Image: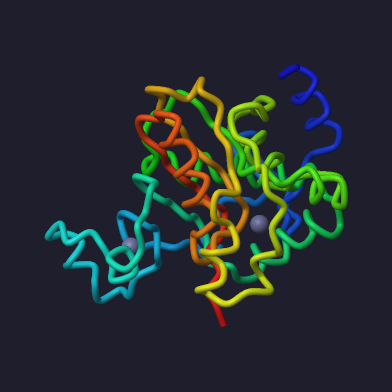
Amino acid sequence: MKWLKNTLNFFFPESCKICQKPLNNNEVLVCSKCLGTLPFIKIHCLKCGNPLDETLKDHLKNNISYCSYCEKQRLYFDKAVVCFFYKPPVSDWINEVKFGKNFSLAYKLGILLRIALKEKIPKVDLIIPLPLSLKRLRERGFNQSFLIAWGFLGKKPSEKILKRIVHTKPQAELSQKERWKNVKNAFLANKAVKGKSILVIDDVMTTGATLNEAAKALKNKGANKVYVVALARSSLT
Ligand SMILES: [Zn+2]
Ligand SMILES: [Zn+2]
């Protein structure tokens, strides 16, 4: 299908989402100049992905890799990596996917995520999206994390590995403490994960409670390593 993409690109070149300039073949969603203006998280906790102050850079060099947040929570995932701060234009794009149903944008964000985090993500056996409950999926009609994971993986990800078996309240309506309780035991993993290393992809990570619970379900079924990746990190207000 590459020839088709190339032919289409020749006649209808894709343009940068920010400056509208036609994109080169190796550029995705935005041109390389605009890519540099995106709100990347540069310094972060090596365990939970929490953005850290620039001044802590030296601590990281000295292998003090955990932040105070990590010490407070029992984390089941081995590592979390988050690409962007939840700020414009990334936050606008996530809303465009969620409320404007721009599926191709979600797919391209997945590709962008893979390229941007290439150096930070270990090789894994399985890449899966964070699932929605069946009820939420029916209400919304699609799972944006599934579309992002599709772009990231370059093919349709499996939906059988991890299921959300409990329909929970939206995390956005809850306080930090309530969020950890709300998602407790919400996931069930397939026994096929035994001995495997798995990467779980989500759109936005806030406290990390949901992704942590997903990691717990995977580890309970014998997953060897669980890494979580989110497109953007928002903070509790
Ligand atoms: Zn541009
Ligand atoms: Zn941390």
